[in-house]
Image 1 (cartoon, one colour):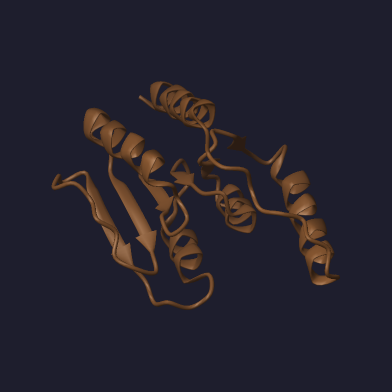
Image 2 (cartoon, rainbow, N blue to C red):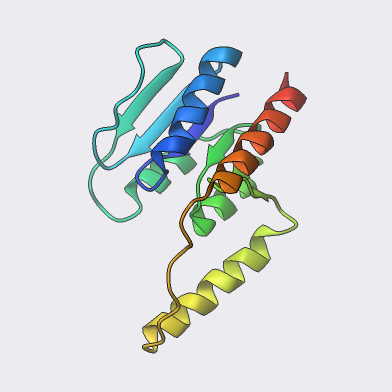
Length: 148
């Protein structure tokens, strides 16, 4: 199993949790981003920098992701593609996305896009709080315990 991180928008505190888990469990962790991502010096963690185009990082993750891999992203279309390839998705807030709930999330996302396109201000996601970080760490730990 490889852990893939949609790293451009992933909060630093979530990356730090992932770095510790990858080293502790000796699992490959790969950050994919449009720009340089600093990583700890360890054979378990690396970074892939892709071209700066729209969805380049997402496309790279989908190309490389295999069944059973874990992807960390808040990007719902990316999550849907990963789930279609039998991967697991955990958002930086600790929500587990799967075939049973990603369709509804995709519909909400599309509805919000339509509202924004019509001039409606829908706002962005709320700030990441300590409870979100804890929920993420717990979801990650549960998944890693089940996978080992």
